[in-house]
Image (cartoon, rainbow, N blue to C red; front, side, top):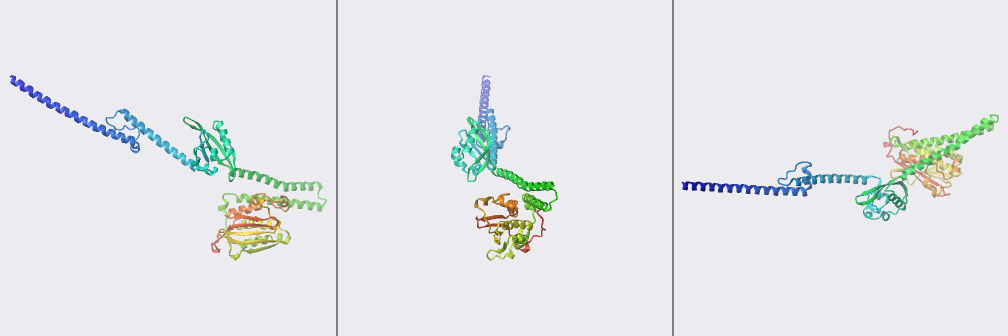
Length: 454
């Protein structure tokens, strides 16, 4: 019996020993598997932290699978991914803002609180004539020599960064700019300044021209209106008993009425030529230059004969005048040339000659009108085509000019894609040139019917 008990105990011990080894094996296998999973999780975590694409591709708010890693690490991963996405969105917006600033025509400069240049867009470089790369980090006063702008900036910094006003910049071409300053805040740093500059030179020039035009129109209209009113009132007072005086007064009224009508017609012509759609709607035909010149000379023949002035038409060089074709609106081309020839006759002395030359210059046809008049001083030439501008105001009004003829010539040339030129010397006469586009040949003539400009 003792032998049987001992045998049973031995068998039991052997069984327990075998089970322990099995349990140990299971534990070892579990430990090895866990270690492998931890290793893979660590590698995934390391890759997720280092690889932006992997991190972003995982998405936000998802429960990322990192087995056997503390949940705090998973929360940290999600936070890192959220922060990365925010940074990516911020970088995209900063890129958009930078592209907008580079494309805008408004000059923008950012300064720190010491007036050192932080950045500037290309419009600022073009407007103020400096290089942003070399100017960055330097005082604005070193990069841009504009005392007026520097004073404005100092005023803005002393006024919590806000300032609005206009400034005259002394550059190669003087400019008028609208300046606006706003505070630029930096973390842990005193506020800087953002400066925007808008070029309003053209706007101010147009406003000045409009104001001057209104004043000139009022002045030009006042004279004939005053004369008409005065002589009509005189006629009403003295009655019709003196036919000779009545006739003289009526002639004065008629002359002033014609002058008034001429001013109004010229103003309406200018208004038509300045309409945006006028250039597109203008009918053009292929016309021989000689036809226009001969028509104008014929129309002004009586004015030339009255002063014994000879009008001579001639080509330049070996140009065959009869073959020169221009592409233009006939009535406007004749009006422009008539204004030039009329002025040449008007300001030339009796018994002199007015020459008209026709030549080709690339894609343009030049019709030049030269006189032997008193000439024009050099200081007047840049403004000679302005409205109501006169070299000799008293003489021009005496001879009946409206002051708009040359302005009309300039607009007619411009609307055709051409130009006008003038050269002159005092006591040696003047030479005005009307340049209009060349037409190909007779076969290229347009079939579009001629349309009156007014």
